[in-house]
Image (tube, rainbow, N blue to C red):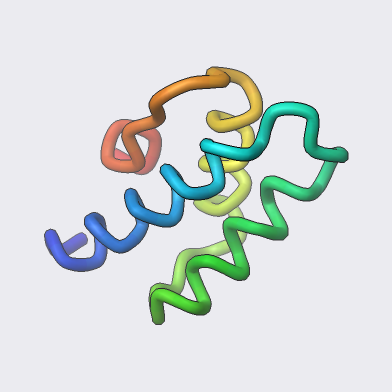
Length: 69
């Protein structure tokens, strides 16, 4: 994955992570998908789910590169 794409993914992850606490189930994944579309980045469903799960589980700073690596 190229650096520009990973930077765009990380920006979306950080935005979603910042307001995920207390969000209804499914919201994090939906917001990730919406953010990725806005950023013009495509990820397969499995990668989106892995990122959403990491955000929901970690409740903190998530490295998209580490999760997707």
